[in-house]
Length: 288
Length: 278
Image 1 (cartoon, rainbow over the protein chains, first blue to last red):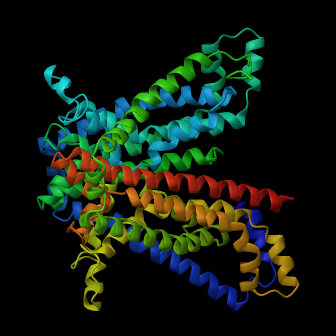
Image 2 (image 1 turned 90 degrees about the vertical axis):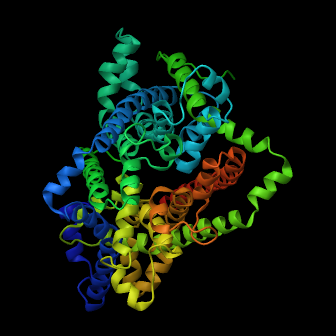
Image 3 (image 1 turned 180 degrees about the vertical axis):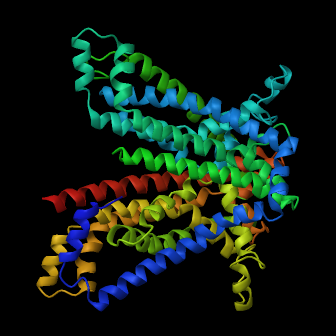
């Protein structure tokens, strides 16, 4: 959010009354309160994650990752993200194409419906799939008769994750495509290009940073989701525990080094997400 | 008027079809299941579940703590946004990037980390204990967790609005003899008021539904530190799907009202903006 770098500084220097002592006190007050608040609420917990994870030394930290259940949780989280993120990316691209390139009735309703999962509590996001596919749910008896398990199994975890991460790519791409307009695409069509060629050679390069941005946020949420997945997973160790759920189990067993070791991985993932996000913003991409 | 305006671009059928089918399968059908499950309850059962003392206690905590967290973020969100927009200091860019951390950090991680810091023997908790302030396992802890996870929404809503405040107007007011407080009240506040309210509502909406970070720090005592999402989970674990759906419906209705409020606020903000630009 750089408010114009050097120009801003020059502006600052010529501003009348900027260097009076009242201004200095106000400035000191604002910076201190901001940093103090962030230090207590954000930085202290972040530091705790790593200090707790390493509290018994590097060896104990690394030993946490040799636990087969921990490895299974990491694998499950990676598999879930690897399935969910591409599907939601394809959806986001399709939704953005339909909404940004065409005018049709009910468009604003469609946009609101796409954003809906963001307004819903994660617990409810998980529960709706239990109501559909759980043992006492709508399709529960039928599923059991055909020996298909969705709840307390991998498909349920993927469905719940897909629901909570559903809007992330679409809501980056829709405003971006709307703003960039259709001139290049229309020019390509008059030159004889087909739909897929236009999509891959014209549209995709135009929106690439917005796409990366949306996918990174989608991935962070997919790997970190707790509430929705907790409701559908059944917490079976080594089978249906994702990393966040495994953290809960280890923590409740007072295995703090193990819990914070897994937490440290997710914290590094969050940091990496922010780095990519900042780099994308540096290309000039702005959230709309 | 036909359903859609003519366009020379291809792919409407494919993309629109895929979007609506996927949306219906993943989002709308499951949500319909919730409404129908709650709707299939007998009216008296529904009222009994939704207005039970335990449910009422959970609403009081969920909504009370969320309101408090959103209010805290209204104040600190403004202060942080102001600091980031108006002042240059070492590490400003890093702090600016870190604001989004609670958004990227899994809620379970925030939960266990906050609990550790604010527990009786934690870094901060040990200094609060002699003062008689207990954070972990009380409603204060719930408020703290909700404050952390909803903080980015408040800051990010106010930041762009603060950038748009016309400093020429502030200077003009100052040359005419206005004090800083007067300038703030008459120039800055009117410009950022819609953004402040949007940030407040977004933070509140996020906080009400939060589950992951709260359950670690709250202690989960019925009637005292039990939030509504946790009560839903408890109903589900007892295979009381209808009871869970009833509570879910109450929360869903409130979320819809919040969403509507956010949209109205943003429309109001845009109108203010247009009027200011004229």
